[in-house]
Length: 195
Image (cartoon, rainbow, N blue to C red):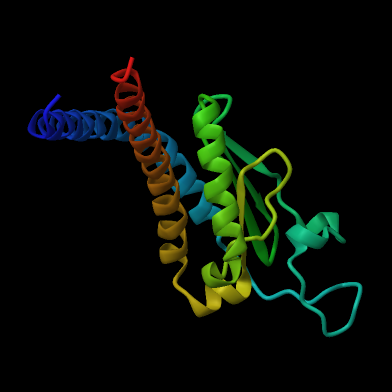
């Protein structure tokens, strides 16, 4: 096969990849919208946080959702599920909210990509301010928002950040999977040409 024919084949492959990405985005946004709107409204309700000193130790203020010292300060946890693998756990208390997200992992490639991507993000947790270094068991990533965060930042912007994160993480993993599959296809074709 000549160099020009190979180049044209790659261009066609890239066009097909872009087209399939656009179609996937459109389908994803149609099914994702109700799920994200439910998460948004629940987060907006849970973000009513206030400063609350510890009842155990004087002059201490720790996120009650993490320490769990007083049962009366914790609200009922809410699980919003899109399907059995994609869900969000929202745990609220008087001075903090913990948001745990389980991301769609349909096959082995998505599991590997998701694991690597989440590990990369959690290693840089201090740059994200509200990101926890370790997720809640059974979930892929967790955020912790305290009353200090809501005092320093706009509540609606924090909610927008979480929703935007959920939208983008789906897109990123889908795009990475498409790119990996396209690259594997090209490599396999090149390998099989020699036989």
